Length: 233
Image: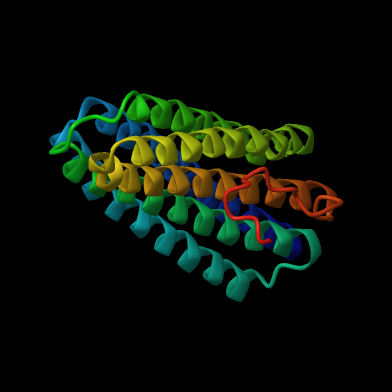
């Protein structure tokens, strides 16, 4: 009976932590889309709300880590239960980093709003961010449903985000060479593009945690990056 009570208490603790993960994930999804939309609309007030909301994301990560540490200390989980707790901590860390990238996108919106638009760059960045948001939704669904196949699909889709970034990078270089007056705006836009690409990497890390959680093994081979802008010669 005592073992059953401990197991039941662990399940309740885990459910509470997973609920916080999903809440955090929802806030991060919203931050990605709102930051990208505010950039396209050149809406500084909307961007400022994204920056302010990041504090709630940070607070949730701290809460999740504290609760996870408490469960480890009190319940002494072993094997798969410990794997569950550790995966939660890693996923919350990835979500927090994605939130930071969304906040940084919102920070640059105020600067870019004072400059002339560079073609449809903001729209292209929004489409890229939307794809990352879809990946995050699926990664979190894969986590809740313990769906390794969906998680592997998310991992594969990161190549599409890399290709979108590669195309934007080439466009920004072209715009800067054509007109030096575009350099400052294009540098800001490039950093936003790179941050969005990094969001995709963190979503992929979440999906990789799901695969590990379900199978006990990390994906078979190192993920090939499709970002060719930083290849070392």
